[in-house]
Picture 1: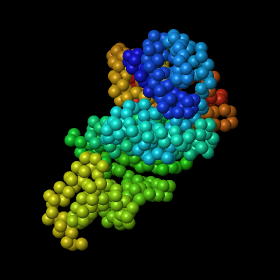
Picture 2 (picture 1 turned 120 degrees about the vertical axis):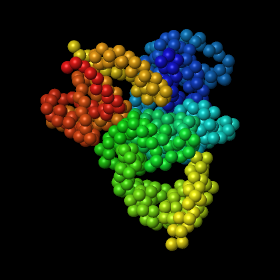
Picture 3 (picture 1 turned 60 degrees about the vertical axis):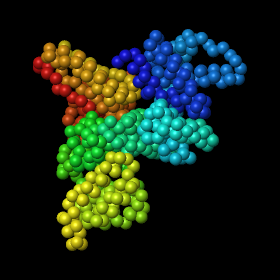
Picture 4 (picture 1 turned 45 degrees about the vertical axis):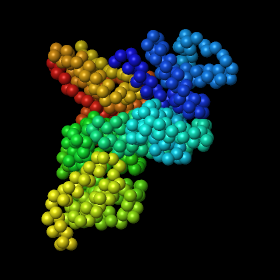
Length: 424
Length: 124
């Protein structure tokens, strides 16, 4: 790897720590970001000559803080900037700073930073956009591309989010145990949302939003390093790894959706699966089940099945029942219906699905699954109505194309299907 | 004389590698290994999963504690390692517990699942 490639990586991985500390110092997102940018520019100039510092994050915090202070002073009165050599020669002061910045400082800073971004005053999409900009340092263009909106619109969205965060005022004292638990849950949700944004916007094997999935996994790993004994964070990380392990198999060469049971399992990323399974093992030992652990366990059962027919649907059904208890939601019940359809057939699954209609009437998967079950039962006319509703609610081209394929199947075998329907 | 080469790096940097960077590093490492494989000098090669997947069993006379993550005492040094094929973490912990019982001194055993394993071909 070249020097500059190493520097890029070091800057990327130091960003959350450095941004967290700079935010605590300046209490202003824009100032913290500018100071971090400035520190990165200096790092690119200095590190190739003087070698990488012992603790890149501490170096960046120190230099960023100085440049921010300079800026404030300059705005107050015109002062001469200290010469570059003075700012770059930080050997002694850096180690002093690095000693003070032990792990727990970093932890609270990063948590605070992530919490600022998952501010409940912001709608979910703004939380994600802000986190990607501030914590991950993705460019506005990258974020706009992932959200499929124009760069100008995204710029505006982020500016608005920042203004709202500033107006809300953030408490900057070190979070106590109760605060920390609450923040951790909020932050975990935010990371999960970042992943979902990438996962559902992906509309082809080359989908740009794979970046978002990678970024969410990176953030989850970071959070796990900060809280190595939290089984739910292990569960979250494992869940994201398992979902992402199937990225290459989820679409065919034409960008059409390939269902789990039809996926080429050789395309699944074994490395991610191994890591996730080890992590679930570790999480389970704590005997403190939570929604992420259960979802990860479900995904793990799919990952463990060498062929689709070897899937342990009984266990999956049981895990969904656990999830319904831990986190009751019609979407969870809808997912359980898939397991039920495999174990007991489409009738039993449909009985589970029908009562959800009122709450899930605007949900693509509800109509898609209902249509699929009706189709299996030979009730073609009703299936067609359900699929039509699903198409109208599809959020991307691949979803719509998948349902259209189902409709084509129905049209191709009208005789058989309608015959069965008459028997109803 | 057999030598063990233990690889250390900054995990926050290596875990920020993209897929392409990761692939490139692995390709370059493999080409280094090839020379020694051909000379019959390379034994097992193993890559560990990240430290976040680790569990540690700490042993002091009279008690053992299982904790998350690699929290080795700095005064302890790596003395050796085992490779063991276990169905679950609990089984691996049992093995470590047995080791700690057999070993009268205090110390710790870090259990790190493997990400990659190549047996190699050393003449015995």
